Length: 439
Image 1 (spheres, rainbow, N blue to C red):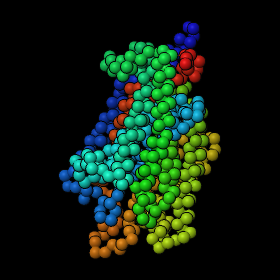
Image 2: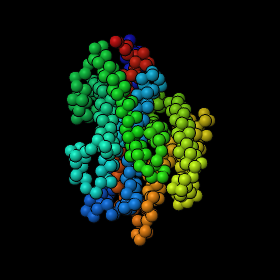
Image 3: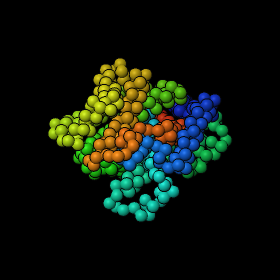
């Protein structure tokens, strides 16, 4: 019994070691807040002078903002894959990874709702979407599923945290008084009894079941925003599964990046091990192979038929203005990472970090390629307009506003991971046989 208590105290100490205000945390948060302030100043310029400060014009009406929106929605789906799909089928190795995926899902889903506001010329009229929204409008569908997915993800994260919050409140003494008081409120007087554990497990299971169709809906609806038009490059019935699979790729890379930094900075080497990086690498290879299949389908079918409008779009991608970005994304962000991760030596922490950064960046530019080129080739000819109406080029203001979404997501991830256990304490103790799981 004494050995069990000692081991349990050691786990609690290890997994709560990072819950303290350090100098490094202050510097990092200061950097994020300063960067966000500069970017928000750029947004005030857009509010004052209108969307003309961005590169958006009549023909390319969706620029970096919509590319960024699609990317944030996509990355948030990783919570569904890790906790929902793998969790429901009983995969055990995801225990230290699931909460990281849930934190990323909450952060990116929350910011996805804000990103769409960046593209609005009159954000003060946002409520009209809800008051006067029409069911025929895919925009209303998108707003509805994004909001629903965020609520479900936040509830899932909170429910899985309740037992750990109560545990940390009772078992640790190094926390500041205000943190312990906050934990006491958030724990909702939870006690470790079989009845309450059963209720939480049942509620979590219900949420996991609900979150799977909601997550599939959120990115399928996002794909419909494109696929329901007649534009060359968007007119495809494959966009639903194509977008969902791509979401798992960007989300999986985000989780691996977070795993690396949490392992190093929070000293979690005994809990986030090389085997977890190995397993995440295998999972990423699997979803990337499916995504590669959809990429081949996306371009092979129109390239074979080579209709006039599709031919113009494909020539622009394969050998025109977007060729460098297109091939860099396909080779550096998809094909090469798949090949590298087939070797076990590359599925270790540092190589996985580098590969995942390439995939993550490539995933963002992939959305840019989906959104921008198709708009530069409308069916109606572009005549008698300035050059900057024909060709889209992001402005510095637009880039700064886009960067603000990443600063906000990083702030949310930093705060959630800093003040709550990144690795579930109780589940880890149960898996190691230190706490009996009573039904």
